[in-house]
Amino acid sequence: MNKTSGAGVVIVGASLAGLTTAEGLRSEGYAGPLTLVGEEDRMPYNRPPLSKQVLAGTWGIDQTTMSEADQLERLGVQHLRAHRATAVDVAARTVTVGGVAEPFEHLVAATGVTARRLLNSHGVRGIHSLRTADDALALQQDLGDAGQVAVQVAVVGAGVLGCEIASAVRSAGHHVTLIGRSAKARFGQTGGHLSAMIAELLRENGVRMRVGVDVDEIESRDADGHKTVSALRLSDGSVVPADVVVVAIGCSPAVDWLAGTGIDISDGVLCDANGVAAPNIYAVGDVARWLDPVTGEARRVEHQATAIEQAHAVARLIVTGERTAPIVPLFWSELFGNRILVHGRLDPNLPLTVLAGDPAERRFVAATILRGQPTGLVGWNMPREFRQERARLVQHVVQQPVEATEAVKGSEIVKEGMVA
Amino acid sequence: MKISADTATCIGAGQCALVAGDLFDQDDDGIVVLLGDEPAESQYVIARRAASLCPARAITITESA
Ligand SMILES: Cc1cc2nc3c(=O)[nH]c(=O)nc-3n(C[C@H](O)[C@H](O)[C@H](O)COP(=O)(O)OP(=O)(O)OC[C@H]3O[C@@H](n4cnc5c(N)ncnc54)[C@H](O)[C@@H]3O)c2cc1C
Ligand code: SF4
Image 1 (tube, rainbow over the protein chains, first blue to last red):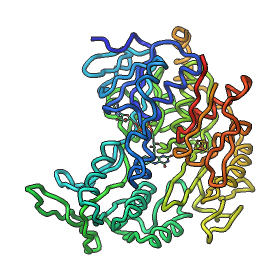
Image 2: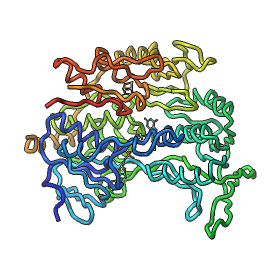
Image 3: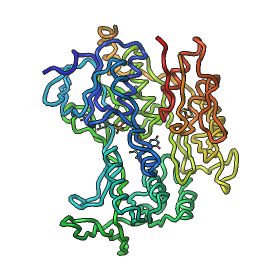
Image 4: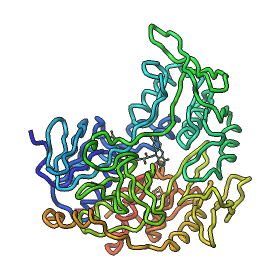
């Protein structure tokens, strides 16, 4: 059974990065076969609203859909829904999907990440992650099952996602305790600069904060014959009562299917500065660890804007052989109606300089500045000014051409045969 | 070509106004404001680029046949 229509480009992972790669390939003029393999039995959907509008109850899950079946059809994309890739043979250029070795000319890994779980949480009801639409629905059900009654919710992990979940669940009227291992809330690429402001915002809105502690034990009770969470025992000996626990302690890249290929998958798929992991094999989105040519470090970025830019960069590389300027991260978050935008990285070792507005009023744009140049920019409820400062910042970025690697050169040769 | 923008999905990143300031603006909350929904042919490329870079995927381009 050959489900893909011949070689061409096979993209594994049918979410933001995979879908955008497919769209990018077509808009760059690629006319060959295009297959999008996705493990989830859904059309591609957008994850950010899961911890915002969906959790707060203002959006139905259908509003997160990014692309309908007819749109993919028009794009000439064969979508293998509920199909999992399990292995890759680099030499033979095949990827195993549903037990069948499918040939590819170019393979794009866009498998994202999966949520890490708390130890010993297996088989205990009421403990949730929030990564997929199914996760969101299950969480909603547990929160709603209490019958419009406020329930005790413990959120484990005080990163961006944990803070957002705490905010949305608290806004829905539940009692929320946010538990974090480090003493400060970690907030994306903000170098700790926003921790105090965010903690204050959360506290002011009634979120109880327990930081600098670990979860030692999950206490459970028997409910209708099922082991159900009742409380969390923390490393300082205290006990937090919990009907529902949401775990947001980070993610692990979904790379098991690339084991044995010789590709470095120790922390995501290691790529050069153009997203090339091996000849004709690329990685984009949350799973990808691209080399940053400016710092010489390779790192993963778990944000939408980076996933989109990487997808376009790889599509362009496959079709035209053109390389990309370094991608500067951009992310946003929403906490109790406050919209926070961050461009670049706030440097923890530099002071935060206010460029507009006033942090005390929760309306400001600020930056960490190194030798007269901002390294990172944050906008808090000041989107217009943020954009203006950002435009100035983007102009400053030196668009250095990135050296071609051997892998890229290799892929260019094969490229010629496939671009229609 | 027709452009539409979903203001409920828009997160005010300003990516669109940054790359295509002639087609998109933002209101005081940062939410996208279309400056015209039928771009000139010379603006097609930049319109598509703005839509493709929107991190919230709030902009839809409908290409006429
Ligand atoms: C609740 C939540 C809120 C977020 N909020 C924000 C935000 O406000 N701003 C922001 O910038 N980013 C946010 N993010 C991050 C953003 O969603 C990610 O950066 C984005 O989804 C990355 O897209 P991706 O396609 O790389 O990975 P994913 O979206 O994780 O998609 C990977 C897909 O690959 C599939 N897959 C995995 N393995 C296989 C396999 N072997 N075979 C086939 N398919 C496979 C998975 O099932 C999944 O569908 C949020 C994420 C979550 C979960
Ligand atoms: S790029 Fe998208 S999210 Fe950002 S302002 Fe424009 S429409 Fe809104």
